[in-house]
Length: 103
Image (cartoon, rainbow, N blue to C red; front, side, top):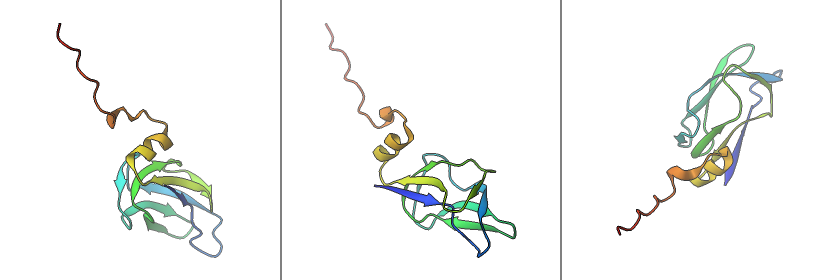
């Protein structure tokens, strides 16, 4: 299953937030409640924990400012789902090709 991570509204007057820093790298496995992202608002920088466990697909670069409720990342429960989501070849998880038979 793919889980969505959106820019939360951290305060009553907040309409946008800046991704100050991702605490994980693209494709990294994360556990629930592990620090995921630091979000900067007009008043404060807040570290947000991961709401799910799985493999992270980052959709917004660090330094970008986005409106609240914008999809900023996705978390795939399995590595296979992550590769499909990220559009990367899953050759790392595929079995190696058989060696040619000796003649």
